[in-house]
Every structure is written in structure tokens, then in C-alpha cells.
Length: 298
Length: 152
Image (cartoon, rainbow over all chains, first blue to last red; front, side):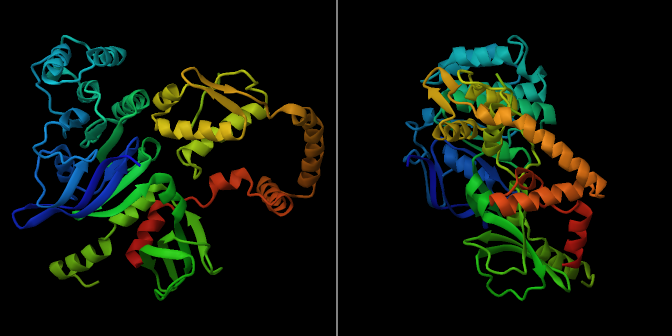
């Protein structure tokens, strides 16, 4: 299968701190992937490595088989919208479309104009005077006009209100339908991802916590509720992602690898959001540390 | 032309929901052979949904022989599900109404009836009734989850 983005043991260090570590993932071409994780998990670093803005300190990153760092031959295939959608604020949308044509080898100005017109974006107003939602749409339209094979978006919807967020996702999905581009977009808003994305990468504490096809992930994860459990193996359960205990009950979020063998457990389906949250949940460790730091007993 | 809706709280995947909605429309005669399904691009836009999901649903319907895709043109209904079963529905509905009235007279609440239908469907047809798939075990309310976290 054709891989749009591949990383192998990828790492990036700022001073002593690893911003990204042991990152290995494969994003097949044609997918729409969400890159989720709390702030500081390494999402932006991973995207910057994939665009070639940063050299890796460990491992490898390949975009359609080529290393993107200091490699201008792969650049036409990559579209990137950085956080806060930076644009020259004094330029109008029409001027930016013209500028894009001068700066890119491949440029579909007609597509950009058509898209911006259908969104009702004024061509002759400085983009600094547009709303945040409109500015995000301009950045997306410019990026898509490059006809990239891989579209990378860093927190494109984070600062948008719910309506603008939905409109942005609608435009993005239409772009995917029209061009078949592969998309990787980072977000810390987990809701409404389930519809837009068919692939998921969860980063946590600079590492890959989970990656895979969304339907597979939803199909294999379950919540189990049963009597208090000592942590021994349960038939049918491949991995316990998160365990919570009361004095008589245990609640597990698990990844199944077969049929559940024990009738004591009640099995519940879980949605994508709950799965993502479970992989990011390390509150129990944090609470223990914080309790001792505050001098509070557990 | 039909318009799709998605239930965000459903436990059924979006592509399965689309398949179910087409089948439902075929069953009640809302879609008949020759009708065109909404274009993938239009569904992707109106629902802000991944076009691959729509394609997957259409492919599944095609495998079942219900629709045919014409490349570059669209997807068209090939077969109906209404058929003879639509004609039989009126008579079956009458019997069901009579049964429901007897159930009500016997003191069964709406929930009792639903439970009875689901159990019987599972026992006789060996299938999970569609309604349980959708409402199966919603997550506990937030307050309960937080309480569990404090206990844990």
C-alpha cells in the first residue's frame, strides 16, 4: 500500500527535553487522519518534521518515500497550514491567490477562487480584517490550490466557534472528495473527529500512544464492568488500557483480541472520544505526585 | 433524492447508518429503481463527513446488489426492498395493532413491550434488533464517572 507519511523511531529534542520520541507510524495514502493529544504532546513537532521545517534528532520521517528535510523536490506534494493560520494580514484574498501562483510550481488558481467565492469571502478586503473562520478558510483554499498529495493542518479548528468549525470541516471534506488528498490534522477537540477521520494517531507525553484505522479501533475496544479484579489475565482481552477500582467493582477499558470468556463482566461499547481519553488518561499518577507535593494525604 | 442524517450519539458507525437509511428508504418505497443517491461530494459536504465513509456505504449497497455505481455519473438504485413485503405490511400491521391492544389490556407498559419484542426477535430470528444496537449502554453521566475516579 502507498504510504503518504511514514516515521520510524522518529525523535526531536529541544535541549535536554524530547518533544517527540520513538515515534513510529504509517499513514496510508487517501486517509483522513486526526493527530490528537494534549498540549505539549508533540503534535506540532511531528507536523514540522513531516513538512521538513525541522531536521530529526533520531530516526526517520518519509513523505511518499522521500525525506522532507532540505528536500525541495517533495515540497510541491505537501500542503501545510500552521497553527493560527498565519497569512500576510495586509494582503487581500485575491492578492494571496496571485502570490501563491508566483511561488508554486503547481497552482490551481481557479479552484481557489471558486472555493472562496462559494464561501462568500470578499476578494478585496485585507485578510487581517476577516473573521477567524474566514481566515482559516482562506488558508485552506490556498493550501488546496497547491494540489498537494499530503495536506498537513496544525490545529486548524482550535480557535474557531462551532459554526465556523463545522464549515471548515465541510470544506475540508469536499477538498478530500475532489482531490483525493491525504490529510493529517492535529486537534485537541476530539468530538466531531469520528465523522471526519478514518485514521487516528494519539500522541501522549512525546510518544505515540495509539494509531490505527478508526473503525478497527472502535470495533476492538470495549468497556468491561465487573466485580473487583486483581489484574490477572481475562480471556478475550488483549490489553487493558485503563483500569479503575472501587472496593467491590472494577471498570476496565480494554482492547479485545477474541470473544470475552468470562460471563462475570458486562461489556459496553465505547466511542472514539472515550477511547482517546483513556489512552491519554494518566491522572492517577499525576494525582499521587501532586498529593505528595501539596502535602495532602490520599 | 433523499437526504441523509447522522445520529451523533449512535453506537453504529456513520457508514452503517447511511446503509440503514438507504435500506429504510427502499423498504418504504421512498427510493425506487432508477433513483439517484446523493453524490458522495454532496454528502461529505452537508454532513461534514469523510467521503471515504460515504464511498464505503455505497460500495456495501452495491455488493448487496441494491445500487449500481456509474463512474463519473453517480450511484443509482438497482432494486427495491419494498416488493411483496410492502403489500403484506398492512395486514401485519393490523395484527400488530390488535396484539398491542391486548398487551396494553394485560398491563404491559411501552418498555415491557419493547423488551418482549427484543427478546423474542433475538430468540426467533437470531438477530440483534436494530434499536438495541443504537441505544446499547450509553456512557454513565459525568457525575458518576467523576465519582468513580475519586473512588479509584
